[in-house]
Image (tube, rainbow over all chains, first blue to last red; front, side):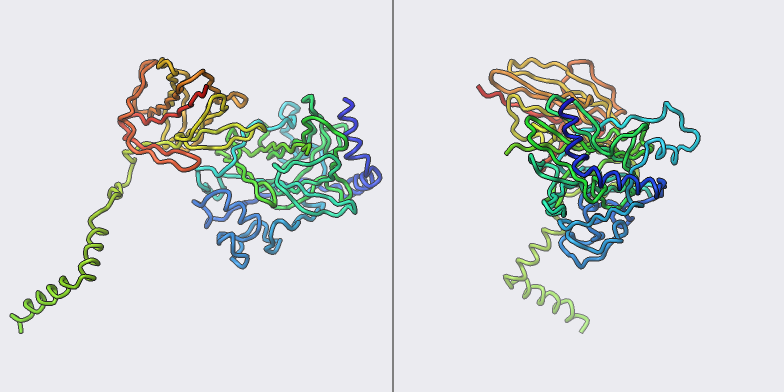
Length: 295
Length: 191
């Protein structure tokens, strides 16, 4: 329990004043989740390899060669001009991502039909993670792609509080290192971040929990940095053993029908990219672990 | 002129044939046209072939799975799962032949065409073969749903395996739909 308290203190209390200000601002704006239809792929990419298509979409390079920065761009992250993704392309617009309650998100989807029984707990997704490309190609049925994707990267925060270099999840983080997480998903998602201490005890560290379960609502195709407040970050100090951050990102519609398909992941220098097949009637869910390194 | 024309054609043909470069080109063209490894395209409808992609997913210390082809080298203590992607619905039979040449059936798993199945299906379970020496063999037999399943303990002959091709991360096995397709994974025990 001491571990949890210490961790929460490190991640949140270090910027407590800023956090409370941010929380107040959030409450004043009260953004409401809107689940908008969003198709991450385009028909011309159907039949292509899945992860390259996702990377092209992510970097705005369209269906053309990933090596050609002048290539035609696809929809998707078209609001961002082409840029190498090792540069940060995340702007925390309050309409792109904000802290809200799980019941609020689910209420938007299920309306008044929501019953207490249908509210899921945000437990981690247990789908296995395979490093590599899937065999099943990208397809679109009724205009909907058969895969959903997620990009996650560890972003260093320098002592001045500015974001610096990025790295894939496998790079982990070190004691004393201040980090944020960059996230982009192809679907409207809810996000929570847990800490798992060396004894295997899990505790929610972001977003801070209120009377009802808080989540971050993340709009499809919008790169964001977590924690959302500019001067918040994660930092582990003087920790020993296998300390982990666990990020869970789910499609809220998948409360009762999560995809049972494995997660395919490929790590690039500028982050980790993941895809999951979502058979008809099921919804994407990802849990990824970032470990504390002791070197 | 009418009589001369065929003679002229023959003469030109002879002349060209006598030219070494032309002869070589013609031979090459002939090869390209006549020597085809591919079967003619199948008519519309269900393909008579049936196949599967098989990968051995080796578990790393952090739980991440790395796919490998079935013809890779696996050692005592390697922890892994199997990934199977069949082209049609069917049943996958997994048997094990241990270094003492004893064969026993381990699992029967229903699989769906076009969808991957990871085996063992339980998220926390993995295969791990331990032994003192020799080879442990995992046999994978995929029976399409139109075939009757064999009695327990039946092992398909390796002769039914028609085409197997491997990349670094998967093996692709193709057979005729009248027979099951077969793949195997060898775990080498080192003393």
